[in-house]
Amino acid sequence: MRLRRWGRFFLPVMYACCLGGGCGFAFAQIDGGVLTPTGSDVYARYFHAAGLLDHGLVMVSGGLNVSLFPATLISRNQISFYNPATGTFSATYSPLSGGTAVVPVLAEARSSHTQTTLPDGRVLITGGHRNASGTSPGVAFSGVEIFDPWTGTITAGPAMSASRAMHTATALPDGRVVVAGGASWQIFDWVSDSWSTNRTLARTRTAHAAVLLADFGGVAGDDRVLLIGGAGSGPTTSELLDPADGTSTLLASTLTIGVDDLAAIDLPNGRVFIAGGQNVATGDSVPFAYVLDPVTDAIAGLTDLPNRAGGAADQQIVRAGWHVVVLGGEQQAAGVDTVLDYVAVFDAAAEEWLDDGAMLNLHDDFAAVALSNCRTLIIDGGVPFLGQEIPSNTCEILEFTDPAICIAGDLNNDGSVDLADHAKFTACCAGPAGESTAHCVNADLDGDGGADLRDFALLQQSIAAP
Image (cartoon, rainbow, N blue to C red; front, side, top):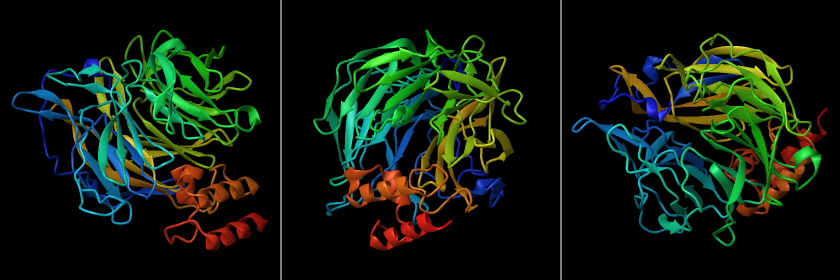
């Protein structure tokens, strides 16, 4: 949802018929998987951020709430924690170092910010809008906060060199974080807790998509970040950020129509799948999908989103192997928003849509966090009420149940088990700083809560199997 298109009045509501209860449905089947209800967030919110912590909890921060008296948007500073083992949320957090449980809150209430888990387990929270009031989500700012899971405390981090909201934060394999938005980008170094110099983007952009391209073009250690679309001076364009030399390269390949609020994800072969978004000229959502090869600088149009002629924007996108799932968001036509429960499954290997259907609930401006290659938590988001959109606290789980899609031992999520997964497993056994959280969760093949020699034996069996 574009913030400038919000209506003038807002109403809070418990939305009891659907929130937390899956609107009466026990599950929803999709090709290769299922959606099931889970516990409700402690707080109703949208335009929030979320991420997986190293010890398996999901942390949800900030966002927007609404109030009736007076009718206004409110920036949230609340944090909640989801426990996948119990399927419940709590505002209370038990520090890893022990001691009394705490209720952490952000020092600066914010929305449309980013949240990134660092290799040492801390959480980097950057920018966003603050001081929401009336129909305005507030103003962008440069403030940074860092959550420490060992103490449960939040402290101020070094500010970015520029104010940013609706920007992106992309974790590199070495744990540094590339933050991009507005007219510039910079890198956060988690070892020194410092920012690089501010670097100029080839095109200004907000509400764009960002995708990590690890080992770019098959070159080990050559990691790039691809930015696609976004409101600004390059809504049809993409550019490659090279953290090694601080340069930005504009690609020649372009989208058919300039969009923001689009979705994109990397594929196992290094290409990038792109879907949906809002036409920056008209505001209408688009149904287009593409596959972009950033190495050869070639883009090809795919069949449009199935059964969604009016398009979709603000959606989330997840992947298991070669299966890509587009989730939720909104359709916009002639200034009218329609919140979606849309689900579509794409086989990227065959480049064809397999299925489309509905989630258990409506979700717009929401968050999705991969609990593993197989399971994704869908968190909160906007829902319609009396002609307006208000925040909800409804959550659900997307799980791939087909073993041909969710492959035990596929630690790099490329749709197969091979020696590359062996290397990933070794890094996981080295400790939290050795590999990203999602890979290490996937390394627990026997489900006993950690990656150890028993899991290594199972991985060896998978590699040896024909």
